[in-house]
Amino acid sequence: MKILGIETSCDETALSLIEASGDINEPKFKVLNTALNSQIEKHREFGGVFPSLAKREHALNIVPLLSSLLNSENGEVKEGIDFPFTEIKEILEREPELFETFKKFLEENPKPKDLDFIAVTSGPGLEPALWVGINFAKALSLAWNIPLLPVNHMEGHIVSVLKESKLEQFPAIALLISGGHTELILIKSWGEYEIIGRTLDDAVGEAYDKVARILGLPYPGGPEISKLAEEGRHVKRGENKNRSEEISFPRPMIGSGDYNFSLSGLKTSVLYKVQKMGELDERMKIEIATEFEQAVVDVLKKKVSGALKEFGVNNLIVGGGVIANQYIRENLFNLMEELEGKVLFPEKDLSTDNGVMIAMAGFLKQFREKPMVNPEIKAEGNLSLND
Ligand code: KG4
Ligand code: ZN
Image (cartoon, rainbow, N blue to C red; front, side, top):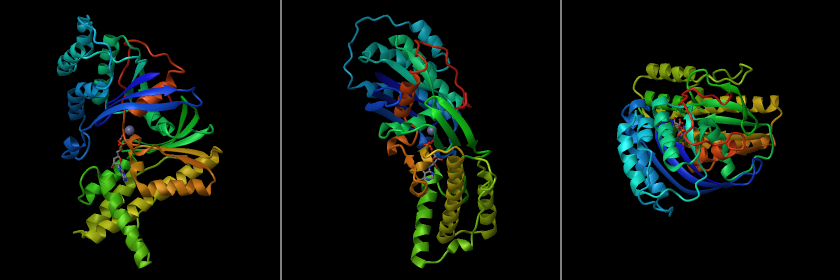
């Protein structure tokens, strides 16, 4: 099957064209092409993702991205084809600029060859941003007469690990950690999920971003903090002495007995500490970052190992932008070694938001739900995997 994936839930406009084969127990994926535009620079001055700007950027970039995605696809050029422009215009009513560029695109570009269906993210995410992808996918579905399937973004993050590895056994547990999410999910089978724990306030990536802001570091703060923390651990090893005795932060909810997280308290502890310390020099920043990262890792490990034990699971899937963090990765890897289990990570390009994981999730979903031409789809900002 050839599948087009469309992702616009946050600050990345991401498209993919993949080829999927095999059955639901042993799916195989080949990436034919991808096209991605990251808006991260545009949102930097707001210190986070600004929804109306995200919507505008998606609408501006999605057609050029589709052109570049399909560039190498030699479909048939149909002369004088009658597209249902009145209906397409209605679908794109809230994105009038998009309609104009899309109309031009349809008139100038061939329909791709052998495309089986389109998969689009319908949630969770920022609703104004999600709507651009959904309306665009519907318009495309109608124009090309290609079926369309809505996909849960979080399922995309989970199945992204299947690109290179195989999940040997159900149930499995997934830990999803990103700027918007921190969830522990029990995977009973593909499509059957139960959220067993989640953050009650900030997501892990969000906590990194907020702590970075407190320390006067740029957005996104995750990579900045992790760089400092790496340095801090290096110094500690060199000096052979535990410097964090001076700075210590709580491990919120580590002993709560459930699988929920709370990271805003940790962030607040950092804030109080910084207010007390006054002007921070580089070494203080390093020590704060090191202890903050250690607190995050301790909590993640405790919750994950508790869940694995309670549910008798030894396969862990980890997804989301925060696993770019080498220290978190290493710790989860070592934990699974200790427990004689297996951990699956997505490859680097698939750990942050991307279109490939959406097309992959679409492939697994079409075994349980048939894609349809121009279906009713709503953006669901809070779409849950429990649904
Ligand atoms: O999954 P993602 O690309 O976007 C969504 O939030 O959906 O994740 C982005 C988040 C940001 O909060 C960023 O600070 C964090 O991932 N991040 C990191 C690292 N690299 C990115 N957090 C900790 N350590 C990192 N190395
Ligand atoms: Zn994501």
